[in-house]
Image (cartoon, rainbow, N blue to C red; front, side, top):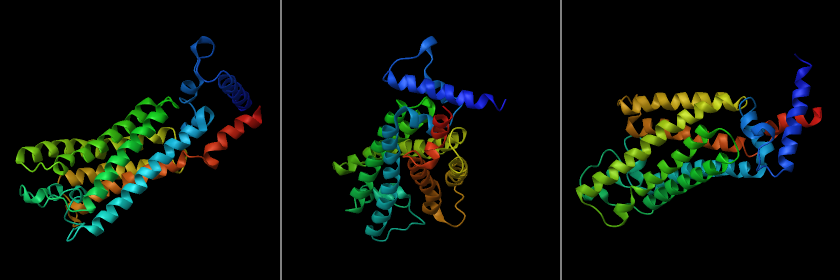
Amino acid sequence: MCSAEPNWGRKRFRVFKSFRESGGSAQLAGGFHPITALSRDSYFLSVLTLASRSRVALAGSLLLIGGAWTILSITIAESLTPGYSVSNETISGLGSPIFSGICNAVPSCVTLIQPASAIFVFAKFLNGILWLWSGSILRSATGRRRFVLAISVVGVANILVGASYLPFYLGGTSAMVVVAAGAVHVAGAFTTFVLTPIAAISTYRFTRTPLRYFSLVLGAFVLAANFLFLTGNYFGMGRGGMERMVAYPLYLWGIGFGASITGGPEWDTQVSDATSSS
């Protein structure tokens, strides 16, 4: 059994070499497609390296930038919003007090506090676009279609959250406008808070240690925090505090996973082994 491993490594490298020399567009004999086939029994990152290093590095950078920029934007917006309570108000309240969870009067609570609102809303749009772009890149570079679809859907969900504030920027302050915007906002936020941790947990199957455990723990933590948030169990942290136990780990996972697929020793280990054994 042990002697067969080097032969498989050499065979795998030769298959990829032939595939790359052909331009990567055609299947090999018998309908065999090396990227799809090897992604089933090889590490996600190693397969991506052989397929298209630069494009996947870009995809990882987009996730990293999106997460980092969102965290910074939330912090800046909190600092620029007079009287804002991290414990009692939701993150969405930075875009408009009507979504803060403590202000429900229409139209007074629809008032936008600038520049905090613009900073936050821009961050939601930017993060959504970057995740959607990253998902599009990864879709063409790996066979992990369900995972990549989740990344893209989360991107769309973030864009929906940002779009839910646009009626207020256009002057809409009626109860009907608030209800419609709220429905879009809840749909986007709920999708993000549920689908992202599931996507993070799913990476346990095809990422390396310690990232696989990092993803598993953060994903499980977010799902648990989500349950507590939705059931009103805040453990003294308030609604805003518990919501941050959901949101911040998701941004951290996006940063960590994005950084891990931009390159580095873990990325190249299996490729180097296959090359040296040939």
